[in-house]
Amino acid sequence: MRRNARMDAGELRGRRVRLQALWASAPLFIALLLIILIGLTTAWLVHENRRQNELVVHTFTVINEANRWELNSASATAQQRGYMLTRDPAFLGHFRNSIDAMTPSVERLVRLTADNGAQHRRAREIQALAQARVRELWRVQSLIESDDRQAAMAAVAVARVQNATLRDRLNEFRATEVQLLNQRQARAASSGRWVLVLVITGLATATVLAVGVIQALRRTLGQVRESNALVTAANETLEARVRERTAELVEANEELQRFAYIVSHDLRAPLVNVMGFTAELSESLGTLTRFAEARAADGSDALPGEVRRAIGEDLPEAIGFINASSAKMDRLIKAILNLARAGRRTLTPEPTSLDWLVAGVVATLKHQIDSAGARVEVGSLPTIEADRVMLDQIFANLIENAVKYRRANVAPVIRVEGELAGPVATIRVIDNGRGIAPADQGRVFELFRRAGAQDQPGEGLGLAHVRALVRRLGGGIALASTPGVGSIFTVTLPRHPPMEERLHERQP
Image 1 (tube, rainbow, N blue to C red):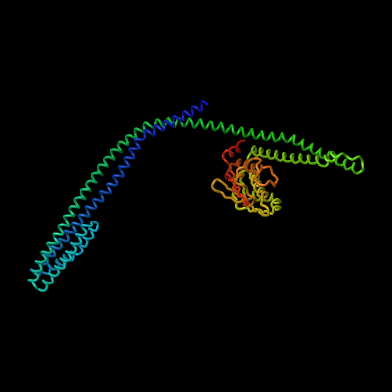
Image 2: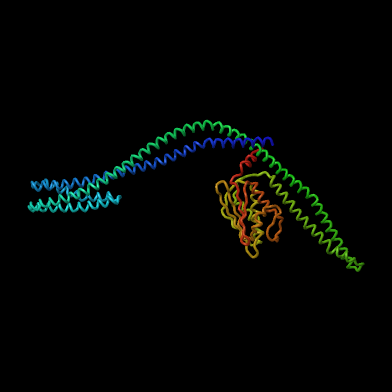
C-alpha cells in the first residue's frame, strides 16, 4: 500500500510539473503566434506593395504612351510643313513614319486604360479625335501633292483648331493619370513603410522570443529532468508489479491445472467403482431374470407382481440410467483431463504445412465425412511454425463439428482456406451447416455450452478445447454465423511461436 501511495504521489507530482511547464510556456506560444501573425501581415503588405508599384509603372506607361502619340503628331505636322515649304523627300519619309506610328500608339493607349472606366472613355474620345487628325493630315498631304498651296494652307489653319481640341483632351487625360499616379505612389510608399515597421517589429519580437525560449528552457529543463526521474521510478515500480502479478497468475494457472488434473483423476476412482458395481448389478439382474423365467416355465409358484415388475422394468431402467450417467461422467472427466494436459503440455514448435496437416485430418475423418455425404475442399494454406499435435486437434474438432452439425437434407460442403499476412496466418473453416443463433455465438466457446438442437452427442467441450489450444499457440479464434446458412470459424495464428515460448523451449 505504501509503495502504491508513493507511486501515485510521484505520478501526481509529475503531472503538476508538466502543467507548470505548460503554463510557463504560454507566453512563448503567444509570442510565436504574434510572429506568425506579423509574418502573414508582412507577406500581405509586400504583395500589396508590389501591386501598387505595378500600378505606378502601369500609370507611367499610360502617360508615356500619350506623350508618344503627341510627339508623333507634332513630328508629322512639322515634317509635313517642311515638305510643303522645301519639297525635300526626306521630310516626306519622316512624315510617313510619324503618321504610321500614331494609330498603333492610340490603340495601345485605349488597351492600357481598359481597367479604368473613366480614363477608358477619355481614351476612346482621344482615339476618335486622333483618327480624324490622321485623316486631316492625309488630306492636307494630298493637297500639297496636287500643288494646291492655297487650299493646303487653309486646311493647315483648320487643322490647328482641331489639334488644339485634341491637345486639350490629352492634357486632361494626362492630368487625371498624374493624379492617379500620385495616389498610387502614396499608397506604395505607405505599404512600404508598413512593411519596414512590421519587419522591425518581427525582428524585435523574435529577439524577445529567443531570449524567452532560452530562459524557459533553462527553467523547464530541470523540471523535465525531475519529472523524467519520477516517471522512470514509477515505470520501474509498475514493471515490478506487473512481473509480480504475472508470476502470481502463472502460478495460479498452474495450480488450477494441477487441481483440475487431480480432481479429475480422483473422480475416476469412484466412477470406476460405480461402473464396476453397475456391471455386477447387470449380471445379478440377468440371474434374477433367468430365475423368474424358469419359475414361470415349470409352473412353480408364481412370483408376486411387484417382484416381476421390479425384475422386468424397474431394475433394467435404473441400471440403464446409471450406465448412461456413468458414461457421461466418464466423458466429462476425460475432457477435463485433456484440457488440463493441454495446458501443462510442453509445446514443440516445428515448421508445419497446413495443407498437409488438414489433408491428414480429412483422411482421418473420412468415414464420418463419407457417412454424412459431405465434401471437404481444401484451398491453398500457409506453412507456419507451431506445435503440430495441437494444430491437428484444432482443425479436427472444427471439421468434425462442421460435419456433425449439418442441415437436414443438405449435403455438407466444408471449405478450408487461408492466407499469410506478414507475421500472422489466417485460416477459415467455412460450412453450409445449420448455423448458430446470434445469442449463442458468444457462448459456444465456453465450457459445457451447446447451441441449437441437442440431436448430436457431445458435452459442450469441443470448442472450449479448441479456443484453449489456439490461445496456447498465441492466436485467436472468431465466429461468424447465420442460422440456416452456415458458419465461418476464423483462426489466426502467429507465423512463428511467441518469443517467450522460444525461450522456454531452449531452457533445459
